[in-house]
Image 1 (cartoon, rainbow, N blue to C red):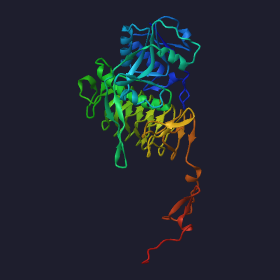
Image 2: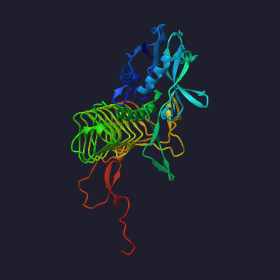
Image 3: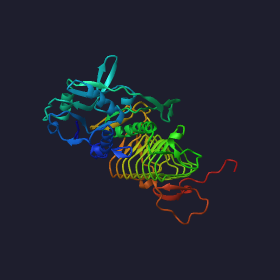
Length: 429
């Protein structure tokens, strides 16, 4: 049975890449989907523009903006193959696994007895013709009509991301840990949230794989040992990694040629190949893509960075960074909704994001300089360069100022404070 990926022409702003080039951890969505199809014993999917190219043979059909885990795919294929129905569609219970990246998705939610289920664009079509001249929305409706709902029940546990306190109350973010999951990717928030969810899935997959080639490094060990011989929290380390003895790394996946410098802290994180983390770096609940580097004292909390970017920030949180971007110290996405959910722009309108904790999005090849401050939920388009306002930076420095004189910034020039106000003396003087 062949597999077909229907082209949805999805391009996520601000990146505007074909959806298949969007990143899931260290690989593109298209490569990721091809890999899990192969692991499930299927051939790579053939891209098609419409269902006319599929014909009447039994087939697996999915839309190309679908993210799905390997366990979910295997469970669906097994159940759908046993079904006598002519069409079958994937369904997951409405809960943490589907809800974490649920906001802004084009989802169909149905009642199934005492619970609700969410339908995803993965179908097994055995002998049913669909009118190929109709649009994607109508094709989805045709495929759903009369299709058996194949419900895959996920096993899931929840962990809490490091929380902020607002008015004395913590703002917790529950992150699902599960081998199961699916999502329709069409907004930059989905790439941010699904990468965070995919990190937990990858950790669980590697813990299950007894023959995995990863290795374990624990703080204080003098050499690498097989991770399967160690207790949790595990660290899966690739080839030629250089981890400073003073660094603390746990519950993490490290690619090849990763460097972690003195006093680095990496916890619940994914570091791709050739990543370099400098001294006193913190990566908490973050995905750092291939070839990325950080500068000293950088702190990343729930951040996803695509390949070959440079990050230097005292505290960057809940933010998605594109490829080949540069984010320096002093850049801020104010990502706390004081009055409720933060808003994002979607299809030309400002809509609720479903989150009170949300930073922002940085496009490919952006340069964000010191004191580039954004409200939460904003997306910076590709190639933008945002720098300090000229009047806020000191350009002219006089050479004849007496030592010890108090100076201030006057329109980009250092001036003496006594020129605008007389020297102050205590009354007793």
